[in-house]
Image 1 (spheres, rainbow, N blue to C red):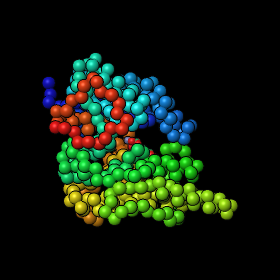
Image 2 (cartoon, rainbow, N blue to C red):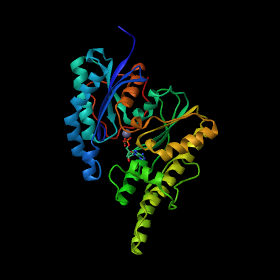
Image 3 (cartoon, protein in one colour):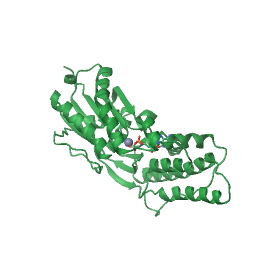
Image 4 (cartoon, helix red, strand yellow):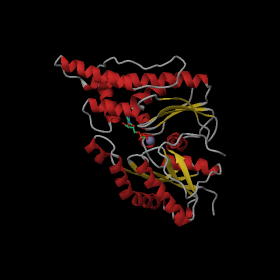
Length: 340
Ligand code: KG4
Ligand code: ZN
């Protein structure tokens, strides 16, 4: 017997079917992600029923592969951690039910993890968290600034009032005729661009840490329509660069203001849009100049994966938190602090 803690993580909240084994909350032993991107591309986005069907086909194989790669038997695990919410209800249910069946069959505790807590804890796989910390979460469904005073303590100080950052990326990419998911496409175009169109920044009220991206999206659409009326075509790279500059500037400025106001020891970025090269560079440079430690996980741990769910589940396990077999998918689950 060792005192090491091995947690199996399972994630199916959107369009990735993923399973991973993490040791002691910090070390990835295996990490398997089956992406549905090829299928979603055909439809220009995630179709909930199709996502669920993919999860059903993949989930058992993905869990088996994660265990095989980790060279562990179920009996050697300490618990199963699964994304309980938020997300697509049909997609969440596949992961939750797989986790319940696995936990029941192997007599293991089950732990329900909030998807955003997972994104935040992807950082714990890279370096220890130091509190208080500021987390900037930017994904397809979320744009949030969260202060953490300790493990499992989440204080929401700002969030989007309309579209999430990733959603704005995907919608603008669609306007430009780029394939799904649009974030990486816009990122690439912006990096290669030799110019940029000026689009507005949504600062909102002076003391607000909230975000808004739907106005920016509308400006891009209006810009395209205006050109079309004059019989001119858009330069997609210039639009991509201008759009990205607006998103990155607002995210960076608000994150810096919050980091200073709350006197944090560490700033971390998380979520699919944290894979964005322009955003990473801007945050890295800004916080370096301010002397505030800033971290962002490698790209594969920014987009949806199960290692992050296992990492958060490990911290919850260590805190003594256990779920039970009445667990259900919670599509609108709030990011609340876990009770110690
Ligand atoms: O975290 P994630 O994988 O799934 C959610 O929980 O939503 O985030 C997916 C989002 C998509 O909107 C995608 O376009 C965006 O992250 N994304 C990016 C980049 N890579 C993924 N956005 C901007 N630049 C990128 N390089
Ligand atoms: Zn996510």
